[in-house]
Image (cartoon, rainbow, N blue to C red; front, side, top):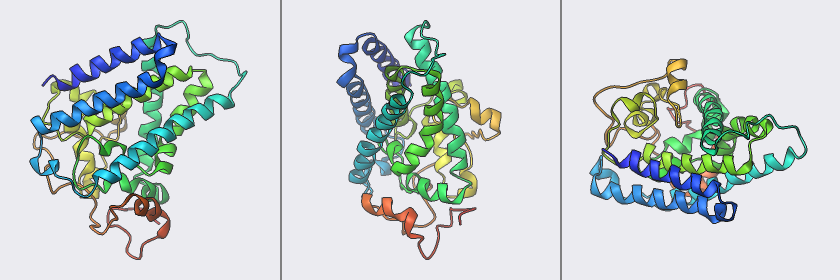
Amino acid sequence: MTAYPVVFGLSFWAVMEIVARPAWQWPGLAAVALVAMTVVAALEWVIPYQRAWLEDHDDLATDIAHALVNLAVLAGTAFALNALRVDLPSIWPDAWPAWAQVLLAGAVMDLGLYLMHRASHHVGWLWRLHAPHHSSERLYWLNGERRHPLSAMLLASPGLLVVVALGAPPVIISAWLTLLAVHLAFQHANLDYRMGPLRYVLGVAEIHRWHHKREYEDAQVNFGEFWMLWDHLGGTFHDRPNGVVAGEVGLRDRTFPTAYGAQLRWPFERPASAPTATRGSS
């Protein structure tokens, strides 16, 4: 299926055009992400992976709130980190083409995301912040952004710190975050597409669905956000012919709150019965 390469390829082209034209950068990058994510949402109704996942599981409003807050948090974190490094020497390869700089920034940030994502499944307090992401009873275009804002910030900060310390321009960082938002929509999409051998390279839906298995013991795989290289190196890559279907994703704890505010409070409330998915929680 050509949906991913066409939509992501066009998004990459549009982002590069915007990077080359400073006057377009705002709101141009946000517009690219919005248009691409809307296309993914529409495609789900044309070629759904699971028809049961087309229905609102009392999650749409919550996931919209998560997306708006978390995209603002990531943009604000990147801006703040850049503000803190004023007048520091830069070793960033500014002479490289913009596309190469974006891919370099993406590789660094993606490694940081992999390491923090994996830690979030094995450190109790990090898991409690990360659990809302796994609480969705379906996978669809929007719940890639379902993250507690503190979790989103902790996941992204190590990679962001490194690229900012290296001197990456803010527009390069923003360009990658735009492309990552498009990719996350595809990664969690309820869209019946296949990527063939590229699934061993990119964290697309057919690979990432295994990570959302309700059985926590089976979900300790495919932590990569964009590149699967880190999972291959870390021994966490998993692929099987039979895919994850409706009824097999979410948390074992069916009492997990669905409202946005309640999900923000949940990690700090220490519920009487901890979710059975929180192996290693304290």
